[in-house]
Image (cartoon, rainbow, N blue to C red; front, top):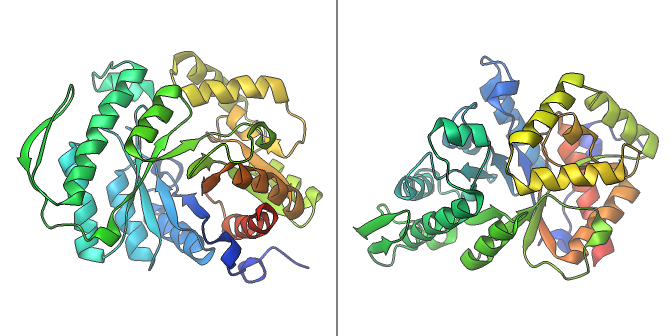
Length: 347
């Protein structure tokens, strides 16, 4: 059975996996030429929609193009794919975020997901003269998200007074239809992030540990950020993996430098786990992270083996999966096969 083309990889999602939401990730402008970037985003969005993804994560930081403009490319290139827009409080007032959400709803009748970001790169924050401590950034994010949610609910004028934000009799127009209310995601890799996500009723997204470390039912409506490289055989999957992520000495140095300046809980968590698991060819693979090629672990292996690992995460209660940036259409198509099989095994 050949599994190298989109036609052979395509498989409709079954009823068993309808509660599982899969998000791909949009290419970053820093990694694509200016002339090709719009088409690369549109192409990845179309791949993701054909593979049955719910949405597409769009990063935000000081070094890439604006996430909201990329979200518009995603919407215009697809019929149902939902942009999962990373939102950083230091970039926009909460009213501006709510206004963007309701404007997309008004113009395109499409739902937006919000990925609420407390930190990001520490150097980005310092360049904007923001030296707010890690846990206080989550308190700021809580206030920020409360205002956005209240504005989008639209039942009455919003008055709020907190340590970081104040609004008085603020209304949002045009109103957002209730069925387009955004899904809200938030990092849950730190204690502060998890507590804030719970307080807001947001989906906590983690950078996962090994699947066997999570007890069955230990999570509720939670998410993980993970890359997947799967094929019919172990040998083919690892061939793709090593071709995609060869050793990168400069990347390894950049990873170590980032560790020294980062106050990110998930970054330190994965780096500690990397020292424990080593570089051996286990299904859970941190080599791309160690070479500063991506910021999430990978699951690599045959469809059978990777789906078994994913099934363990599903049994633990993880139902939202954010995949890495697809290099080609087979990435999201093969992930779709993995999740269809994993859903059956978890059931």
